[in-house]
Amino acid sequence: MSAASTQLKHEVKDLSLAPFGKQRIEWAGREMPVLRQIQDRFEQEKPLAGIRLVACCHVTTETAHLAIALKAGGADALLIASNPLSTQDDVAASLVIDYGIPVFAIKGEDNATYNRHVQIALDHKPNIIIDDGSDVTASLVKERQHQMGDIIGTTEETTTGIVRLRAMFNDGVLTFPAMNVNDADTKHFFDNRYGTGQSTLDGIIRATNVLLAGKTVVIAGYGWCGKGTALRARGMGANIIVTEIDPIKAIEAVMDGFRVMPMSEAAPQGDLFITVTGNKHVIRPEHFEVMKDGAMVCNSGHFDIEIDLKSLAAQSTEVRQVRNFTQQYFLKNGKSIVVLGEGRLINLAAAEGHPSAVMDMSFANQALACEHLVTNKGKLEPGIHSIPTEIDKEIGRLKLQAMGIFIDAMTPEQVEYSNSWTSGT
Image (cartoon, rainbow, N blue to C red):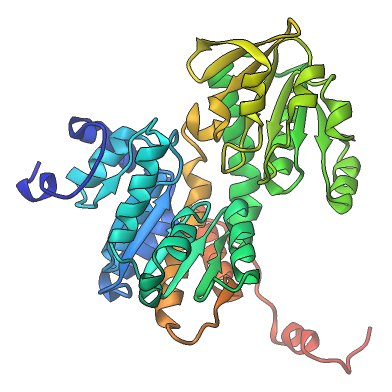
């Protein structure tokens, strides 16, 4: 433990946890070859030299590798938690002690602490913000107008955050470019579908130890996260009901073999409810009232607002902690509802989040999005920008290469044919 590292500004649970955190960070790195290759290049080229960068992310072993890569690229990086229950305290300690990265994150921190950490992040006077949910960006726009001129841009990898950024842009307050990492093909096809699908069920099982086979599982939202969760739950023998507001996604769910109905009809039938919509109060008082006795509800969307827990508490006579991350609400009507992970991201509250292999591509997008913002400083218009196709495909190529998988390339004749309108059948 170096004297310099212990003098870093930080707020973590316990620095003595660092040795185990470092072991876990190194283990995760075995499954993150794409980000490692980017880190190696960043180490040589320093594309982020002189850039003050704030990352508001889930503080996990995978995020640690993103932070390390950004520092290797020359960034003056600071990390805060994007969710009070997702922080891995040993990882936070190791980032401070072993990697010299300031971290402000404690698992279970209250809202006041979380908001204070957001202010600490803004005190860093960032040029680039990496956001999960756009809390730091929204706070900057609302409270730190005098710092807006310092911003080169922001990156966002959650559906919730993209919705907020679009609202900011529509209101005319997003005056800098925002990179939409969330919708990169190498992010949502894999992170949202396979990562969320596996880690959500992992969190539920760790919190409850229930058998999913034979259970009726209601999944609110059939975006990529909902698709992945439904697919994995069906694979474990569950009977799936999907609720949706989008007719196209609802048709897709039907054609994928799932029952589709409004939440009002699903509420009396479900044994387990999983919300993945990115919106608020998807499960409300009228739904709690008709649920089965002992029905379980949890959330795998970014914020803890998808389940109306305040109304549930008002309907209850008692709340009892029955297991870690598992609370039983006893309703006035004589039934009970079980809430997992306090309504926060169940895959991070009760488990370890997405597997490293999928976060490898998501965080490769984040790192390259930051480089893209710096390279194109002053050239990008304010608003939301997609990850350039060439970056997305390069990440896919690097991932395949790391997996030892090779694909075809077009012949000159095929290139000519695909670019011509005169050639017929």
